[in-house]
Amino acid sequence: MNRLRLQRVRVIHVTWQLMPTLAFMILLGSLPVNAQEGKAAAPEVENKAMTIVKRMVSMLSQAKQFSFTADISFDVVQDSGQKIEFGETRKFVVRRPDDMRVDVTKRDGSVSGFVFDGKQIAVFNVQDKVYATVDKPGTIDEAIDYFTDNLDMRMPLGELVSSDLPQLLEGRLHEADYVEQATIAGVPCDQVVLSEERADVQLWIAKGDQPLPRRMVITYTRAEGQPQFRAQFSDWNLSPEVPDSLFAFTPPTGAVKIAFAPRRPAGSATPEQGGEAQ
Image (cartoon, rainbow, N blue to C red; front, side, top):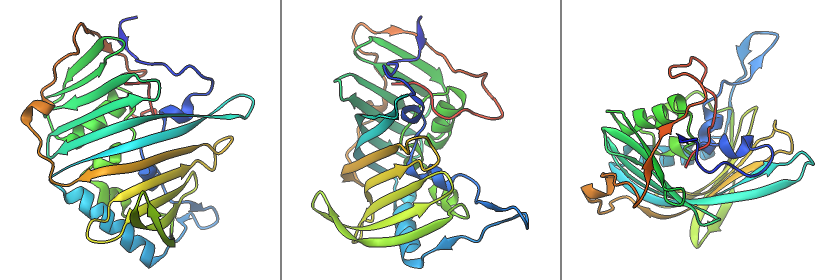
């Protein structure tokens, strides 16, 4: 019982809550293959859309530190076909190369989080009064990979903080199109759409000298019911005042230490997506 598999979803068909890590997951898959020629289909990429996306990716990957808030929602498809929306707010603080904190508040009021200080990964849940830690020296990128692949935990928007984001994008995109200029929460944005075999992604990226994402919508076109994952971004700060103490993990009062419970052995060659966490 005392294994870290916190806050199980109390609905049927949890797959789509647990799977999404970021809209850029569509950029990580292979391009469609031409069955007759055995070659990848030529990407249909619009220059204007890609220029906007690359500016955003470059800014995020090169920032030494930043913070933002993401209001996330996602559909969970029931056996009846009905879609039920769940959600949470995630506050990210990143200080490269090896400090990161994510504080999570679900819509039911439960509070949890992820803390990494370059030496140790810690996850906690305030309501359940439990926490787990594991030694993992290295960078933020390495910590997130270990957290999702080896520990089988979920990290929505994890790729967004990756310093390898440009490499993840390059050569993987199937199609990109410019839609229109739009205003999101008072911020003028460019709306672009990105497409791949498994999903369509809409991105609203702020205009001007800080081309940061303001809204994102993923539609899983191959999944039953075509569920969506949505994220609204706010409170971007590219030079936050971040004390070292923010990344020094202190267990919640009265919390009991438990163990992580990955679903598959560490080092599995084919990591399963998702995982229940936080």
